[in-house]
Image 1 (cartoon, rainbow, N blue to C red):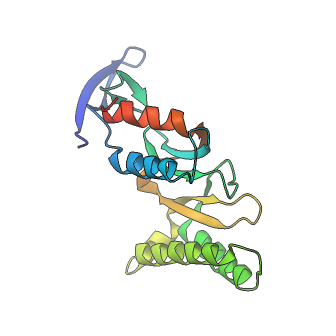
Image 2 (cartoon, one colour):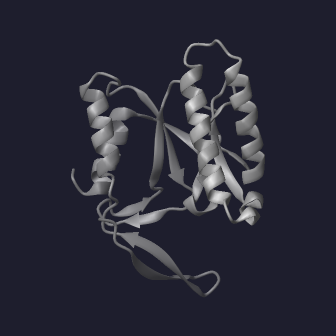
Length: 185
């Protein structure tokens, strides 16, 4: 389980005290189970490339003895994704989602049905996020898009602290990192 503790640190240049998050471990049990199942079923291999979304700010992980940028999410290498998340308002992303749904309805490309369902889920999430709170339409969010067809596949709201850069990593290295952060390796 994720525990919160804080270390007081003094910045010698500015003489200020700030709080740095410190965690004994980071609970990646669900991510590890999903990745292990996908490798065991031969859906991916140890050498498969994954795209990791990390927090923009680091925390200290006691199990590793160092600062880390915690993993928020990951994606497989297909479909190809834009290497950077796009920052935009919730309202702008809603409009892009509706445009994408219209494009996908008219598409006869293989797999477009799956993308349509993904975009509908994102649209539902955005609607739920702003329901009864229309002021949230002007808030910033980050979205992951496919590279070729520019379809949104995931949204992160401002409280997730998502880094704007996707990190490409081999599955085996990713699993090793998650196990160490989880305190199970």
